[in-house]
Image (tube, rainbow, N blue to C red; front, side):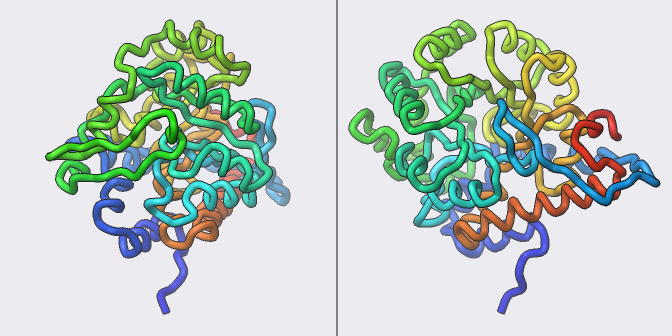
Length: 352
């Protein structure tokens, strides 16, 4: 009998064993040379910790609030697409794991379970990740469904006017399933003789004219707070605050869009300083250890989003696998706080 994983990284090999090569490559791959994909993880390793000693760490409090919602630790589930490729229960299993861990899941617009199915699966706070489509009426309908089903925020992805060049998907001729949030609204079946049909799908439905002015349109159709995901520079961070977003996610889309963008941890502090505490800054990209969570919070993030490891846990063991991934990160983060002399999160910024 194979031994149980002892850290999050070990779930990747279990996922490789469980998944068809096409789907494994889809989840693991990045854009072009995958330079940024490697850097997202490697950049964390270049950051060293400076622990404080002789601090009372008999009680560690990892809890925090995101947009007023309390969670057990600053570790959230990032929006990732098509979970039923990893496990038959798909996003429903992921949502239940998030609820069990008392954290927030951000459901992907490109999910294989519907907004309604995920909402009815368990009682929990969850957000929804949105792509704005050429058919604005369809985007508006989805937003209204999200509101009706109790989602608490919209996370607008802004780094995907077109899909990045993901060469593994091209080689494998990646075929996506029907995306059920669009059923009855839009066909997501694409006929293409070569390459990935995901690329063809994105070209057909994503709005390449999306601009800052469209934040106003989105605000006009919803009362939910809007965060934008995909910010990497201080200039864009300031602009985001100016147009009235409720939060910013520092992200390079898991290195799946433009290769040779910076590792997200290397630009986090720049964005945090530009925002100046006016809105919360969340962090996405390369988190594999509790020490990574600690480093991101020390550099000013309010919480981190975890993407690929969650999918690996789902592929390896369904809901239980996702729970173990989140629990491992929480356990490691708590230990890091104790060994660093930081018993509460409020003293974490500047702790390195």
